[in-house]
Image (cartoon, rainbow, N blue to C red; front, top):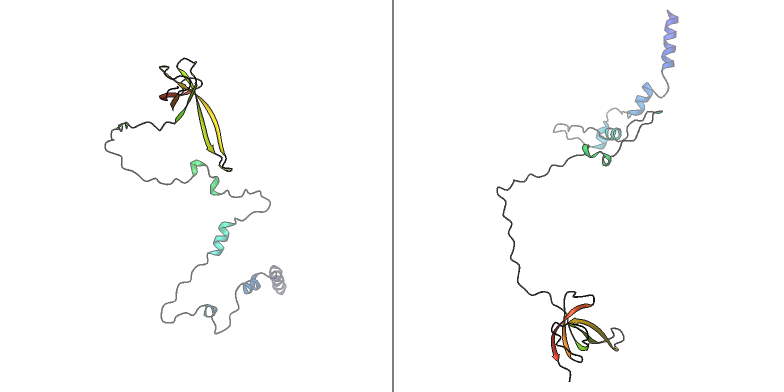
Length: 198
């Protein structure tokens, strides 16, 4: 009988590993001093009213949710973020419902304003050739000062203009107006003969 008791005590001592059981419990819990309450040091409790309910700690739960336990030796894939969810499984946001129109409004066309066309460019120059059929060549002199050096620069440009009645002759001063392309080179037409050649 005495031998069995000695064996039981020996097994109990073998099972108790240092740092576990009673020692671990005392290490985790703060030492209590008689006559003092650990809550008194942190927050004074009102004696008149009922004691407020203790709030549960949420930190261990949050840590457990953020970091799942990994089992050593297994290749666990990391959890994919919500960005990579297939389209069929994505969250659907509700759209506001609109009341359908009882009757559709008829489509009405606004009347086209009968205003003038855009301002067309005009040039004034001297006819240098009327050899072509219904075509004149007008030389326009451009005189302007240089933007930086302020020197007066003269240059001339020749325009092919359409003359329906062949009224303009060489040396006439004419006014031509910009128009749609009439041929490969003609984009102007004769507006009026300002001065006939002498």
